[in-house]
Image 1 (cartoon, one colour):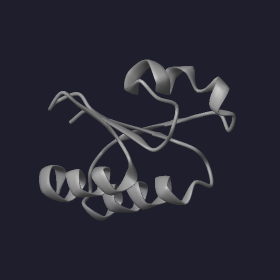
Image 2: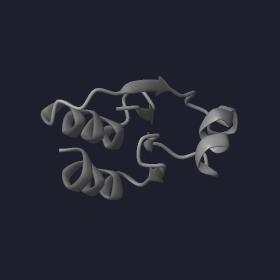
Image 3: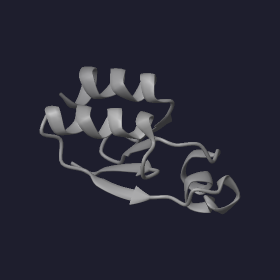
Length: 79
C-alpha cells in the first residue's frame, strides 16, 4: 500500500487521521508541512490547495482533503 499523509505537527485534525490509520494498522508515510500556508507548495502541488490534512492513496488513485472525508475513506476503504 502506498499511502501518504500530509500533516502539520500539532494539528488536531491531522492527529485524528494519524489515530485512525494506526487503529487500522494502515502503513503510511507522513510528510510534515510548514506552518505557514504560503510555504505549503508540495501540498498545493498534490491537492490543489494548501490546507491539511491531505491523504494520498496511490494504489487507488485518490487524493483527498478534509478530515471528515478522510476518516470516512479510511473506515470504508483502508480498514
